[in-house]
Image 1 (tube, rainbow, N blue to C red):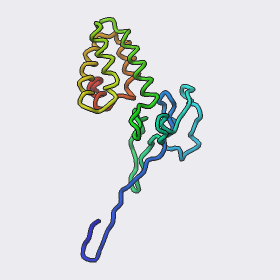
Image 2 (cartoon, rainbow, N blue to C red):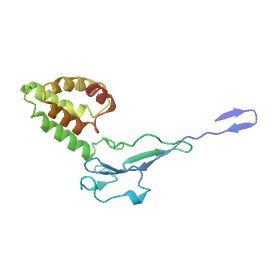
Image 3 (cartoon, helix red, strand yellow):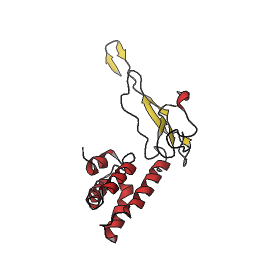
Image 4 (tube, one colour):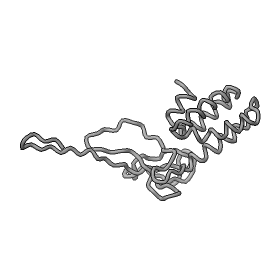
Length: 172
């Protein structure tokens, strides 16, 4: 609220999220289900079932953010975790599982390094101080992997990794 003598101006900037539809593998079908023509029961990219709610708590998956007089120019990205309950979405669980399995393909790691690498995979999906430690460790371990394994790891984890860890592991 801003007041000037007898003039009162109220500014409200509360926006709202639309609901997104995403397949179980993380392909975004639509970031706003109000455009129902774009909805799919099964993903046209991979055939997986699609969801609009968190399987754990049943909260709607947040899509685009809409605010009056604001034009959203950001590309929507499927969230890794539910905003309501904090559980990872199915695509995050699948990526972590696949990446963990891929670590066994790296021949240059000893057992201790392999376990540290695996335990750090979940960490890089979060934006917290420990994630940065894990990102640094993973970067060092990936140097021991073949280029094919390095690329497979990036393909699996890039969409669910936190932005800060992406920049550490895969600098531009």
